[in-house]
Length: 394
Image 1 (tube, rainbow, N blue to C red):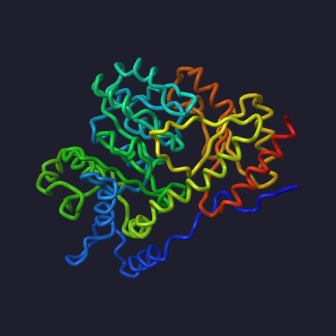
Image 2 (tube, one colour):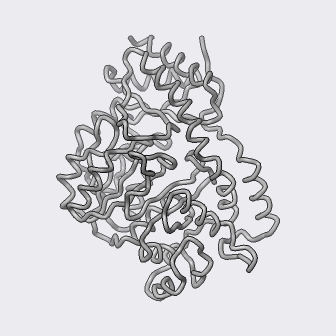
Image 3 (cartoon, rainbow, N blue to C red):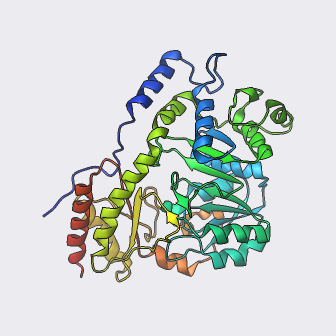
């Protein structure tokens, strides 16, 4: 009986350059982002400058977490208590949590079989809200041409949640370059790893000015390198609250050391994803979401469906895989487990509309993390174990 012995939670060590940079920050004692010197602008300011250049954006703000970046992005675009914000029904809890944190009301949009937002449902609901928080959930990018057209037609402000698509593209254009503002996560299991962290990008000078003040800049506007003129930000200082959520120099230093490796790592993820996807495609009883050829994704996780099995059988299958070292997540469980929860378990949203198509997909949906600590042979072994375990049910 084959058994997989590596951990699905183990990340690669940070590059030597990142470790050295973090050590230098710790030795300096200058951990706070605004604790700078005339000779050195600080690692957070340098990270914002470097990430804006990588993303092709004019401005960038580094935050304490991806969820905090979403929260600040909404406030900076004008979301207020009672506003309705369109949102994928298939997403993770920090997304509706950020909407709720603004006092706004998530308006959930159904899900397509390719795990992207249902554009027909979005178009039908677009007149009921002024904002769309679009999650590229688990790295699946929807038809951005049609999404942006719907937003323009209905005057909906698009906020992109790119936690799972850093380094990905739609039809050659970077994910995160379509919205008025876009947010990325640098939490441990994302494409850059600072434990916790978030990055917000935009080309709008007024939006980034509000975001900088909201994030807790005090009067230190001139210590931002990827920002408008400090005088333009200062005009907001007395009318905009401080919701302290800054990134610190230590985390920024770790990210600066990783950013040059990002595109290479995206390619490495896709090599592993390719072995897994090709192997799963040969297993009877498994189907996979179809990928649009315009989508250049990053395969840091993989999803598949078990359409011929009921909930009890799928839970038994997941448990049997776990017994052999393969850790799978199942979105069809009645109760939240770990990072996985369904929209109908977010009770703070009130009585959620039942979305039949989303429910049907989640009842079949399996999710698996693809760590870079796995090699290609590891990926093939995982496929072999899944095939053997599923064979017991066929």
